Length: 420
Image (cartoon, rainbow, N blue to C red; front, side, top):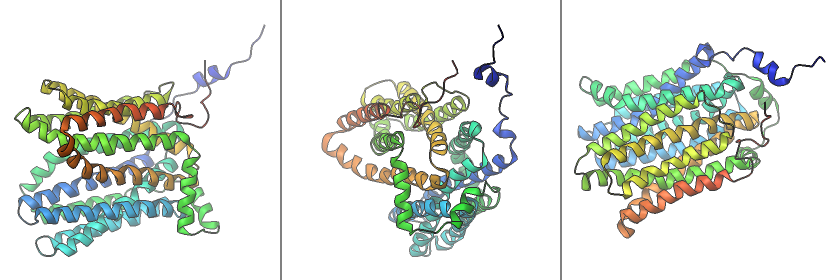
């Protein structure tokens, strides 16, 4: 008796999707995103070198970095609206040019005018913030849906690689170049971010520009309403807040103290941070190809793995255990990040994607300084072990609770069709 082919068989016979690394448009976008990430990471490191060279005081460094953070938080919300109103490529161009223009201003103010450096840092932060949601939306325009997870993994691999090799490279350059020249070099990286990426799809943005525009506040609130349509997204934001504002903040404060006081060496601090980055690289490589059946549950489990970092600092364990815990945390964070970005690009309405992405960056980045500000007084009041215990519990329990939210299992409003 003849049978008709099943959808599964047809899908099996189809050729595998072409690698995203062979796509010129994506490679240009990847290069621009990588340059922006490297420039974003390099600025506080180079400013730290300025303190070592006595061109900038510790209080001045704090003021300049605070201005950069303030500029970032304001611009990330504005950039989300602009990137949904206009061409995402144009928003990347102008925001990167703003950050590039800030670099020579920082160099000009170094050792001469703290006011100029503060204004320039706010401009740099604004450029960094405005381009983040635009890059996220531009990735969705440039890359086909079936290749976005691979694309997002490639993006995070570039960022983590820069974090791993950047300090050594910058220190090497600092042996031959002064701080002002390094700041100008950061501006050149932003020019790469401005001009190298190509155009994404324009249909969504052209339609948005043709439609009557609501006010900025109304459009921003529309992005919030879109986010509320996705319970998994709200649950993920809550889990991110717990891990970043509590777990990451606690370990950032406690790890240097414990490395010094318990182990009497800075080796543990350096090794743990390196292991975290190496673990994140490994996690990105795994998730580039791994497609778990319950992707959301796997992602939230990865996020919860950060709890092993504060847990290892609570206990009088061998330093190798601390290093291993940080490696596990690094693996887990990318097992969450890559599916999270991919799901947002897939599930959110394309014309509102930049605004929803801006909420992600606004909440996760915005609450991190609050956590850092509160952890040190909490350690003074309750002791480092008690604070780490609470933060470790939050890292484990909040993502677990988020995984129970409807739609969280697959990071989708509807479960994917099975091929069994």
